[in-house]
Image (cartoon, rainbow, N blue to C red; front, side, top):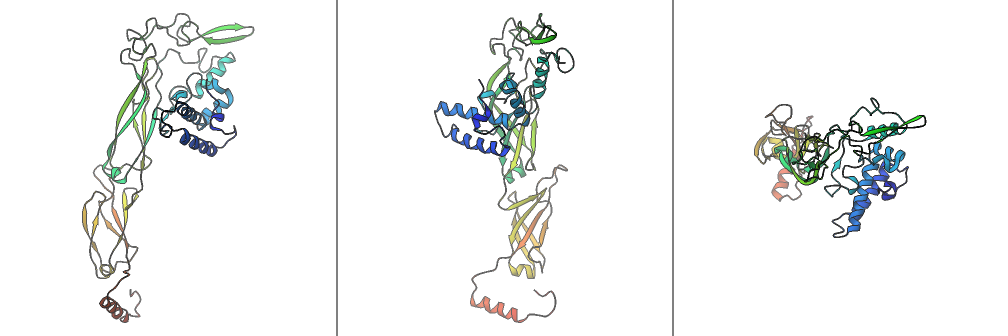
Length: 377
């Protein structure tokens, strides 16, 4: 039986999103399996906390629970992992980004309870025997700026429901779609009258599925799906920006009754770099340049993000704070293949703290040559 998510997280029903997140982070750290090895009770608590947060963080799910209680998720509309928690076990993976189930099903069931057929007609406008797409999956990865420059392949390991290979997701022994239930005609519900009201109930013959499996698949026992460990290779393109979301079509959870799988999404976060600041496709780096080079002109050696060493010309009279532009040595540009942004060198100068007597004498002589002309250094 599902537990009250407010009680699990220890928050009031009118708790703010910030309070809910704070309570969640505190509890998930307390009961995390890495901190409680071989502790089954802590593992169960960890799963309960994840599921409670999955409900309360989503405005639609929270509203549904507040109105209908546990009945809102009786049909599997809670977190994609059920009340069993996260298949990754680390709180970073999320299910249900708009796949099967949700508020539409809740409203439909509510309308049925009042004797209405729901959306689109007496049977709710959707045959219960129809194929249903699987849920979408979401993960996040943090990469370095250099990885964003070159691109990389990221490996994601997790477990989820996949389509049964033997029955092709139909749950039947012969791997074909199950015949329509003769009692409900595939609607999944039967109608009965109670006085003036028409009541719609799940079909007792097929348990509301709309089809009846006479011989179940021996591999999945008629469910059409199997829970397996999976590995996905995601190619992160060169030049990817922080906050980018990549989509892998059909790599999500398996659909029901042979329906198509959901999609897999990967959110990219780019870690700040110690040397470079990114602005679109351009890179900016701060570099100390000797005073003499700024004054007389010369060249400096610069190491780029792809570890190349360049000789950059510094014009005489360059001022501190000016930016030297090196074309084509920024990040790969998404505007056109094979193009790059620019590298800007933010000129700075380091004042020496230890001088020899000869150096001090030269600087003193230079200071004595001060001119009244405007623009003199």
